[in-house]
Image: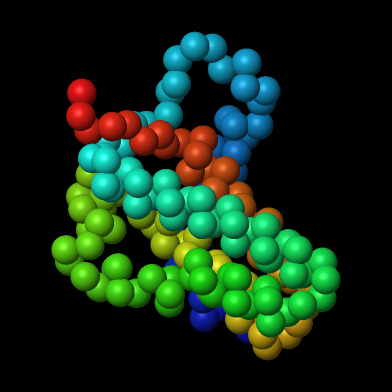
Length: 165
């Protein structure tokens, strides 16, 4: 199996995985053990940007559910369709349009935020490719678990604040 074409550079991948592992360890405690202060880095967005970003994250959650259900049923075309809908290829128009909310958010977010998001989108493309080319349920599960680690890292590291204070 050749999955490397979808992966970021080795250095970028290593940095993302280290970041993800550290953030996951920080998030791996019961919610009451963190005290009353939210120490995640704030990203201040206006209402439209916040809605766009949170909608994207909700879409990721829907896609994950669809992948899990389709993979369990052995329906690799459905796995591929679900995964591709959250992939980087499906969102090229947003990334290519300098006036899109993606670029507005990029200007406001820390520089480490976007490589994590891009890797998440790319991993969904990789899941779609593996489901289509190899129909390997275990590989889909491994790739999905790795990608969910990015979600955990992001949620453990960042929070969205409203820009209207």
